Amino acid sequence: MTPSTTSRNNTLRRLLRVVIPLAFWLGVWQLAAFFIDLRTDGHGALLLPAPLLVAGRLGALAGQPAFWQAAAVSLGRIFAGFAGGVAAGALAAVATSALRGADWVLTPAVKVIRAVPVASFIVLVLLWAPTTGMVPAIVAGLMVLPVLWGNVSKGIAQTDPLLLEAARAYRFGRGKTVRLVYLPSVLPYFASGCATGLGLAWKAGVAAEVLCQPKLAIGTQLYRAKITLETPDLFAWTLVVIALSFLLEYALGLVFTRLGGGKR
Amino acid sequence: MILIKNITVRFGEKLVLDRFSLELPEQGITALSGPSGCGKTTLLRVMAGLQPVEGGYAKLPPWPVLLFQENRLLPWRTVGQHITDVLPRDRRGEAGRWLALVELEGEENSYPSALSGGMGRRLALARALACGGGLILLDEPFTGVDAPRAARILERVRGLGTPVVLSSHEKEVVELCDRVIPLKGPPLRQAIF
Figure 1 (tube, rainbow over the protein chains, first blue to last red):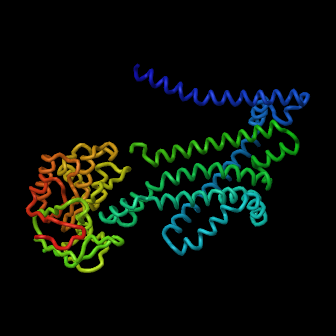
Figure 2 (tube, rainbow over the protein chains, first blue to last red):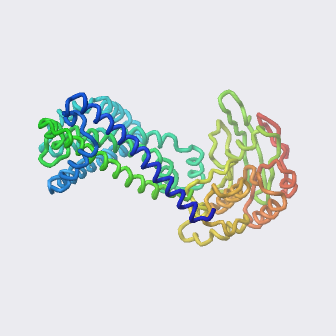
Figure 3 (cartoon, each protein chain N blue to C red):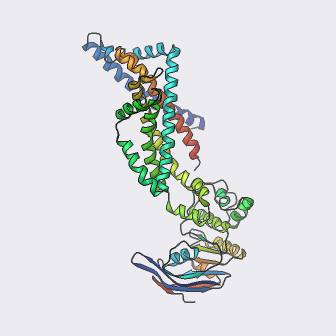
């Protein structure tokens, strides 16, 4: 087999791994929609619209500038919250790992944040935040913070003590030890925390938008679709959330692959 | 003079060095020989200042550097980077010299995962040597390295002119040293030298 044939086979296999599950689940969705439509005398779209109907609505929505504005603003807002949560979680982890005082003060606070239901946060932040647009970002950040804190703390704790001793013996100094030993050791934990946190940020951020109703937001559109019983629109906006989440996760994966240096 | 006087080291209940004393001339290559677990590694760690001791004192040349029993390489750094990481900024160009000393020329861009066991050991040795210091401490430096190559490298290490204390199980390596200190333990009590 020539290298080009092998490469073509690999591409085909990768393509099939996407197409086959997608076709399977679209088929399941279509069948379920068909049977619900039969049992509700043609009103099935109210409960479960067929994939083609949703695709049609998505196409129609995509033709309106407001669609792109809402998607972009939601994306920016939730990503800002995610980034803030990542930074705060990572800094808290460094502080609690390095300083006993910070550990005593911050650890219980982070554990409380982790235990508080997202709905409580949304309502509380809604009361305190100066604008409704800030609520989804803050809530998304609060959901991400404990995940990053837990993962980065674990990464720091699991850094090989033998490598740290070698760094001391070879007189690396604090900065070089952080750069050459701690950061590469913590990176896989950080990446895993970001992947988990991103999913949480989207779920919590959109839920906050649904409750807070900012002017331009995917959550607001979801809420409108629900109260006007436009179930195909509800599905279409949900697909947008899924697509944006996948897109961000993919971009983040690329960044971490580059940072991790795939050459090891 | 390298002097260790009345040093005691204990791991929990286990006494490894019991008021141990040792005196060595500050030149040439000294081999510590003895069965596994007799305390050679602990003694080298004490000399490197990495092992907390209960009592006694040591008078050693400044900045002793230790080659650990394990390679302790960084999987994310290349062979060349392992050397430049321990060199001062103005001496980074010397990396090739240290790699040549352990016969690792041409491997500058390889990662540790691509090296054989013996090559990894030689890289760890080159890093410790490049780090510099007034005393070189080598814990089993030639594990996985064939005897003729080990002999060649040891002669080059001798040429550096820095006193060396090493522990080794390989008879061929021990025979090349200037003096051998047989150790019996644990606990190590008195060096028979």
